Image (cartoon, rainbow, N blue to C red; front, side, top):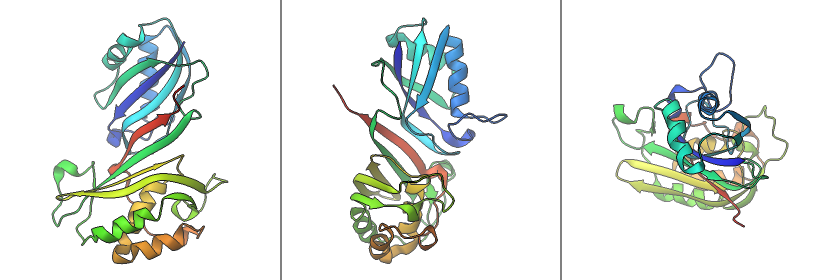
Length: 244
């Protein structure tokens, strides 16, 4: 029986999603919870393999299970076996061919920035502290240039396993609420470090960010883009799937 799991986690204490020998990972603790709840399970897949320190409020995993609690009781059972920094928000029945990664139509990320002169101990592992001036109008103009299909090779490490660098961005924008500045973006898929490097480049460029972004999304090399923002401000917020 196929199950779709929606997960939330604080990435601070993890070396990313993917299981690694000797390291604490989100996949590792989820596997342990599945072992504790289901007599047999297999084929665990995830929509986005988040890096070390990256958070999620709407990560999606798929898994084949045999036995164990029904979907309406499975989230509670799994949460009793999970640590405090991971939670299963929902468990649903899914079609046999559902795959968390390959069935996804789009993914949405949020990057949080604390834009003020003084740091916040409460936000130290939740947002990027940015004490420099911010041009909100320039940031919004730069985000608008990301819409549509572009070549984003400038926003992923030069040494990469990616062979195709074109991505289709359906939505992108900046929101400001007091000291909090959030960048949100939705695309069919993302290159490694793409969101973080977009954020770093836009913030670093300041008033010049629209011109900078317009040039960079046409396949310019990584060396021409700006800094890669740290992982702790990034959240995988939502994964969308086609509905029959």
